[in-house]
Image (tube, rainbow, N blue to C red):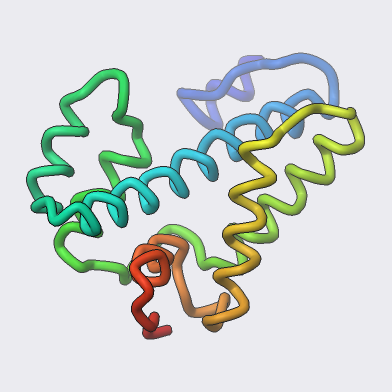
Length: 148
């Protein structure tokens, strides 16, 4: 446990070997679902004709609707900034596949993850997943072509 604190001040001892991987599946599941929800919410706001900058500020101030993903992605989407994403669509799609595989192995019910997985896989058919970030799904949801 002391070694973990040296490596990472935000590190936690979570138990026996393999527990950390299970916890990583959980944190990645939440991050993937939140990220997809942000993109969909911003696309919905655009469809409704709302000012995306204003949406980003108001939702970020709403404890019931904001998340770290929202606070990171929404202002970038509002500004039309899709470069410099933390992971490519290929990486996100693979991460979601691995989480879904673990969920199946443990017979866990993850219907929201299944919907995100299907959305990423469908989007990946229209772009180069190695050079496209998941936030660019915003354009796809608007029916616009996506520049990879």
